[in-house]
Image (cartoon, rainbow, N blue to C red):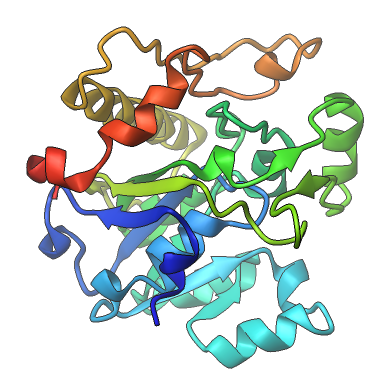
Length: 278
């Protein structure tokens, strides 16, 4: 039985074909994290569409060492820790990897119905991709923000807790099983075209900044183009690069969808209406 049947709709889309993902040196970067990584799990690590592609799916190393959850992750087999040592070992071997660049901070800023990502200060994955010559795929999970209701206040305090590897995320999902995601969601994950990065043994800060911006721009274009294809030309997609710490919107570059139009996103994503997205 497909676990994705738990949701009203949960589907992986490959606009550029699965062949765009090579068997080695491919990095799949999923956004946003969400509370429990629904898109990353079911449309990534356990997606039947990607089962023939050898890859290691990396999660924060704290979870790998958790008493019960860590055992489950190790039992699954294709999941590993996202610590620097493990990433460098895998990338030195040319292993494909899937990651969530936003990490705990991405989860902390989650708000139901609002597309938010933490990316401005996340540059380490680009540095490693340059060092080992990887192709980087931006990936976006439409619907991740609807999986749980979250406590999204006291953002500055919760961000400080993240600095100590404490996931300051409080969420509520299914009415009868609060720790489970809501079932009445439409999850659609889109894997963007690979960005070919040069191999630079010792990338400079300028190198990292340049390619990080290229990646951010590609992610934004991915979302914008998909929305345009879906007919939502009035939706505003904005990346906020403000450095002022006073508001949650300035703590991260984010994709900010007009709240009055956001609910119309899901019905229009039905695959039968947009066969060109496959």
